[in-house]
Image (cartoon, rainbow, N blue to C red):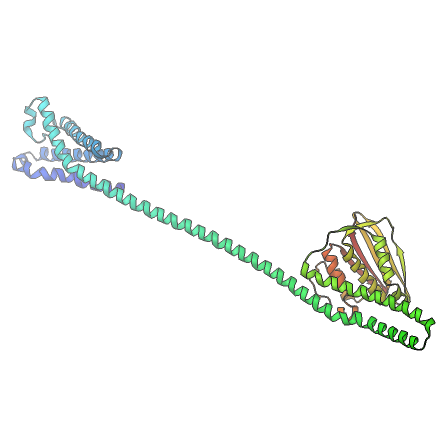
Length: 405
């Protein structure tokens, strides 16, 4: 914009001496070309000075104050340039020098007024054009800034939406994984019911038929022993069914009851008593080595399911042997171990020792081992109980780390 101001000023300042040049030549001033050219240069310099002065005044003052100051400035500069350069170059009109000083100033001021009539409109229109240009540039800058802000807001909105979408997808993936795992567990649960319950049910049918036969033959002395076995089998069956039914509720409720303080020795004794009939049928014995003062914090019902299934698994894999159940205290946890004779497949041992419970057991585990180990692994994860299995030299040992009270 400064270059435009300078160019316009040169044009306006050059037009004024050129405008009065024909009149000066017609008066015979061409006879002294040096004086004519010199005075024309002085007028050009005076016009250029008036141009810059008027533009500076218009930038600071508006309306009438600016107009009056601009006219006054042109009058002052006309007198200054005349009295400065007239001794060197005779300026137009020549008769000015013959008048008193007051008349000279008035005549020179009138010339300044005439100059202002030319320069002020040009400066005004230039200023108006400059303001219009600046206004357009400011509007363009604001528009560009607005677009930048909108782009930033749009980018931020896209980022937030993307993050929200990614979070939703992650949540859906986790939910899908959990649902698939629960579906798998439910399907394994249904498949294992036949394996875990068919045998005891056949045994119950045989006992009930035998009791019916003895009653028909009036052999009442033998009915008592069969009735006791029938009662023990029914209790065992009740434990199996209750465990399975309670576990099927977990995927629906997705929460456990509040933890309680549990006497570890007592809960183990209760589960061993439930298995007395089946354990004796396999010729096994249970050896307990648990300090009765050990108290743990957990969910009593689901901790009982864990012990129930581990004891059942040990009894299934051992014949005519001793099942050892012991407990020791290590820092803030009670270590409950269940040991029996017999070996476990290495792939099953590795699966049990995996930290994540959202892993599928080896093919055939539910069919060969029943649902017991799957229940144990699922519930220990829900109760935050550490589970570890080792099997070597025909001995299998399972360790549970339960939080102390």
